Every structure is written in C-alpha cells, then in structure tokens.
Length: 340
Image (cartoon, rainbow, N blue to C red; front, side, top):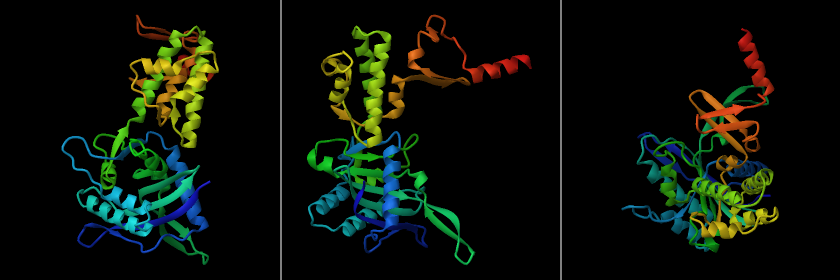
C-alpha cells in the first residue's frame, strides 16, 4: 500500500523562440483518488520494468565535473530546510537547463512524487509524454484531449531515500530506466539529477548464475537435485524482483542449505566472483537457470533446462542439437509441409 506524502507536476513546453522551458506549478497536487490511482499504477509499472540501471549521486569518470545541485536540494528538503514545491522547482530549472543542450528533446510533464511503500521512503522522478486521445462529453460531443502515456515510461528514476540515508556509501540507491542502445537518449535525464551508474545488475546476475553452476558441479547432488537448487534460487530471486526487494547472497545460501548443500556463501567468497552482498535481480539473466534459449540465422530454440541430456542432446563435436519428442504443434506443421 502506497502512502503518498506529496506530488507535483510541472509542464515542459516549447516557447515561441523554440526553446524548452519548464512551467512551474505553484502548489502540490491535491490528494485525490485519481492521484492515488496514478501513483499506484506508476509504482507497479516501474517496479515491474525489466532491465533497470542502478546508481548514486557521484562524480563522473574521467574529467567530468560533479553536478551536485539536485542532490543538495534533495538533502535540504530532507533536513526540513526546503519545501517540496521548492525542491521540485529547482529540479524543473535544472531539467530546463539540461534540455537546452539537446536538439532531440521534446516536451512533456515533470512528475515528482514522495511516497512510502513497505517501510521505505521514495522520491519518484519522471518526464512523462502526453498522448492525444478522444473523449465524449455528457452532451455527446466528441472532444480532443490528452493523457499521460503510462505505457511508455522511458525517462524515470526512483530514489530510495531510506537506503540513501542508512548507507551513504551505497552505489545503488537510485534506480532508473535504461536506454535501449548506444549513447542513451535518457542520459540527459540522469545528468540533470547528477546520477551516475554504480551497480550493473545484469553483470551481477551473470556472476550469480556462473557461481551457481560452478557450485552445483562440486556437490554430490544428482541431476534432478541440482536442477531443484536452480529452480529454488530462481523462484527466490523472482519473488524479490516482484516485491521490489534485492537478491541477498546469504538468503540464496539458505536455499542451498535446505536442499542438503552447504557453504555456498563461503564458496562465492573464496572464489573469483565479483558479487555484492545484495544486488537487484535481473529476470532475463536469471531465466538461464530454468531455460536454454537462443536465436540466430532464422532459428529460435527454447527448452527447459531439465531436458538437457535427455530429450535434448547437445553434441559439441559436430555442433548439433538432437530433439527427441518434437512438440505436437511443431510436429503438425512439419507433417503438413512434408505432405505439401
């Protein structure tokens, strides 16, 4: 259940000279049922969004200069020396300055919301795009309007204020939606906040998968028990991801201990694994614990990990996969094509 403290919207618009400016709202949004629904849905969508990045306020690598303006305003607000509206106003001005550096930038609405969920305080920051729509009035007149495009949440970040205060050295108290390719268009959004990437969740999850595979290979567990360990770890991680929590190495060690395998935590500590004590889960990487899948050259293959060596046999010598028991729907297509 979300407990909303304050929320506000500022408009980012292009002026007659063609420059983007931030039109500041002078007071917070009224606490209404509509606001509860909006922030509840944004929290759900953001938490479920895959492939997020994680970072902190810090100095960029190389010769980059630190941008502390947002962080300083945030700390002033947290200490009670700055109001939420004033914080959001400073953020709007910083965003306006950052947007002026780019030709690709478009307008929208800057949303900032402070709320509590599961005993953690968060500050959600998003630049949201308007989407044209058509509505019908009570007089049955067709009217053009626009609404916030929640389905296209690409410029958004969430600051875990509780973690930031409890552990100022943390490098993952800010999460953000990562860009899709190359030099990310979304980078300007992080730059205006002074956020830099700290923990690479995908790399951490790859390290975890490798450590799991190395570890089960050292145990006396049979094939089914080994896969049971993988499934249990995947289920634990999936639960953490769905709840917005983090993957904890010691919790994973407990999953192994429950299945007769001991000392996984010591195994990772003694090995050459660059694993944090806790880190965000990444569903796409962890899926390798349960499935093998790949696409290339016009061929897509996916099968449950438990079938390797049984229904699906890999021969590395001649680079082939042999599938025994072709899925019925695929078999039907093959038979139809052969008859034709």
